[in-house]
Image: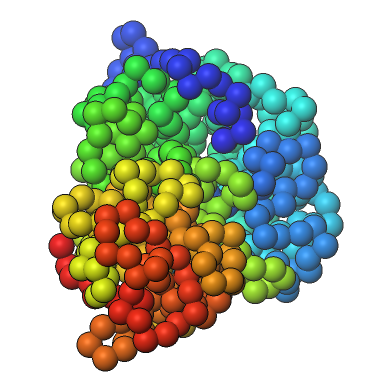
Length: 478
């Protein structure tokens, strides 16, 4: 839903309706808990509101079934290995399902099922007719008939009749959803997810309607749905109150926040409402045993994306854009979160430590040496990047130690930058006697204090590796 959301001013409050007056809230829970859904959304770069065929990040309409399946295997493995995900939510529309590409698109669904991942298929309306209503009912029913014929008997596949049916009144949406259940009565109700009314917000109106007994209920929640909520507790209350007594049936199929700008979601904040939002929703989801499906796992050029896609052809890979965001997502799933170890990295020549100047959290901030003061801008995590290399991530900013512009020359500047898959952010911690050198993978050059300076503020660069102590470092857990 990200593209539509960007059109809304962040200050616009979209009220969360908890319950209509006089509405009964007696529950008919179908499930003990839903946190067996640990998921992410995989989206079209244009957003999923498109008038033509849906093309998820890394895929192409020219891909065969086998190519699509191979690409999907790579992306889905990234979701599993990097995040611990076991669920992927995919968009469907009439153009995708009714045309030749459906034969290839099925490769994504089949790959996920073969990997033991749950697949949520959700209908999205087109871009040109976007109004929260089904674009064409005849096409809608035909599309779902094709899908349920193919996957109605596949226990890994779940069906969400419509994403964000905000154009309908509560009564009209419920009638349409009930018609879906009637039309495809052979689909087990335990594999159907009915969107909450509105923007998947009003859940009690679904839960209290006996026509939907046995189904799941979908909730969407974003910071800009109600910008008046600023604390973790307020977000916890908003989520809990919207669910009422139906927690055993609710899955949060969309929630997300900026992940590529270095925010730290592992530390409470009274000034960053996105941090409060993520932490509050994660904590309440865990407490209630809710499944959550993050938006987006992958969508190219979306600053909410928690994974970055790299590579070409079938040689695709994913990297995590924000470690603290990953931690909160895993926390929402009820999984263990390993607290990272942070180190001060000390230069042998000067005895001073590697420091992000002025505790900046911005891209391109300078890396210099400074007297140790215990600040988070002087603490670094060493994350495995594979192949014997690491990413060196600043605790304060969440950004990576980076050779500017991926330069390979002596004297190239060293900065911090949003973590990605570039080899200019990958370093080898290479022993030299009882000390170590940090060697950049892309250039083979060493992290070096300019001019063997010993003062605060001496710059740090890359330079041809030698025997100088200004290229020798130690790390100490702090």
